Length: 166
Ligand code: SME
Image (cartoon, rainbow, N blue to C red; front, top):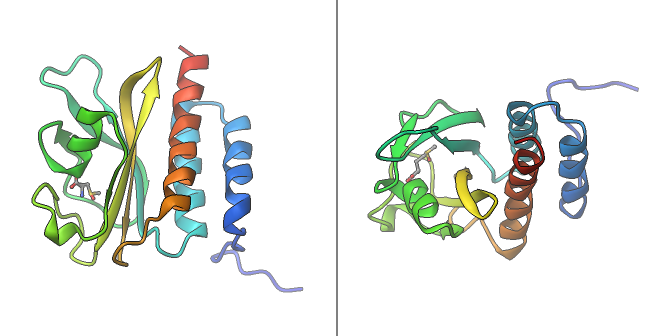
């Protein structure tokens, strides 16, 4: 049997939730957990071309999102205020934001010219937003209901880990 170490086997989408739970069960730190989640989603889902976390900086006034673990091309947006971008909108509202066509959304901060759609899911600790999971796709309208549920589950794993370790 040959093995290709550069290409992970693709896990059926229905089993990704369990795979994410396994990453969370073995995580020794929030950074390790976030890194494991972005790696898994980026490797396993063809349309998830950039996957990363932004976390609110402790004590920043005004509040500021700072880039955390990510997979994909480097982004110019390493710090985002809450009044900017789709990322800022999701953190400020505490609601998942799905944008089917980023070029039609005036809030969009461009990361890659190839990006066509985006989903941003807040991470909550004790009901308060502490950060978010941001995913960009080169495909338009890449994020449907199943994606939203999966991404919300991934973000909730981080919130739950932080609640248990604070
Ligand atoms: N597009 C985001 C900025 C972050 S990059 O996509 C990685 C936004 O509009 O907030």
